[in-house]
Image 1 (cartoon, chains in turn orange, brown):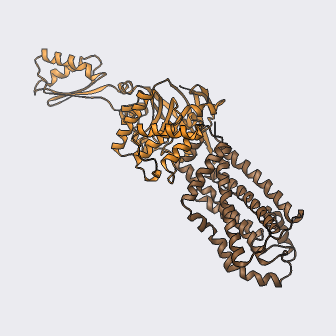
Image 2: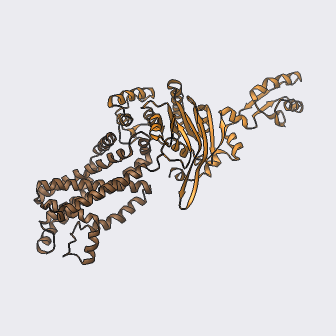
Length: 327
Length: 254
């Protein structure tokens, strides 16, 4: 659905050139839910705006939804749905007016736009809000309206820019459910940006990590996490058997960073869950009764730290002002 | 065309939802009419050098152009709001033609200016006994519409280029003030009233000719020098401004 090669964008401001995106390759196949993860100012929005024909790339090429981005932007626009960061509804407009306008801009008749709109508002739990002004909707409702609008022409490819930014935790979880359902019920392909690790983790099949305008890693959330030196395991053992237990743990395939305290051994292995039974058996046959066990999967924050040498939060604080990306 | 109609209708619906704009918008010209107009009566009668016609046929058409000039210039504010709220992106990601989207907005501004002009004319007619031919009035509304189209398109282009809510009004004031003074809206700049240098500068200002034409329609003067020069000027300006606005709307797209 998306294939981009060397897509780049630089901005020139006051005789200074800022390379917002430095040549990214992106492949997304049909039915995938791909997340574009990175700190603010990393180039996520710029990339998304290029893929959605809102911004002309300074270099590179891309096919989106089967249409060439440069030669057939109109074809791309017809085939995609887009929800911008912070949406795009007019405060003084009624929900039904927004739906009708959106449908008719895509060439639907008024009747078709309204019946499609009714279908979508029902699916997105927006029934009964037709006559409300959009400014009276809650944040979650407004975001779901944005999504309904992006679906009005039944696109097979959707772009969401930070869909849950600014929502309360409950609305976020609710929106995640809706996004998952979009894929399972409509078979759409989804490309979304986020700077929330938990969002990328729980929602996406595959994640592209972008930092300073370059893609620094790519893979499933789990495969990315396994790039970090593995899961952290802490085993509690009776006093006096720590040394033996540490020795046994160190013999597990791939085990490293073995440390001990009074009654516990801590180490890292590539897969904590599969190493556990083996460790249990080994400790058992050495006559050591395990008192507790804890396996900690690495978080995406660990991944980001490993890839870039700084945590996502630090990267955010050092980020360039948003305006440079939006210009 | 389809997009133009859709956007026009939407903007119109939104304007009508808050009809206060129409009252606030015409407050200033109404004040000029009521508090400044009566002063003009004796001045015009006793001073040589004014264009022909009564003080009301001199002042009313000029105030209408001033209104179109000002209210349409501020149209750029609404596009900045739509830009910030993401609405503009939402429209631009649809297959709708960009010039169609722009024209829908611009035509809405033009209709607003015409409606406001009609209100001013009706007031001048009812309260101050303005006497002008109906054909001339209709033609004057066409000039108002073209002026509004020019200013609104240019305003959208400037607002989307500088993208700053702070710089935009400052720039508007810097440009509008001299344009206003040099088009002789309150006191006509004629060769008799004004020193030579001022008269020359005012002739270079295209809006002077627009104001002159507007006055010509009110006194029923349909000659080339009186009417058509200004019509030609405003027509050319409208075409250039729409082209500029459309280019700005299109820029940055893939």
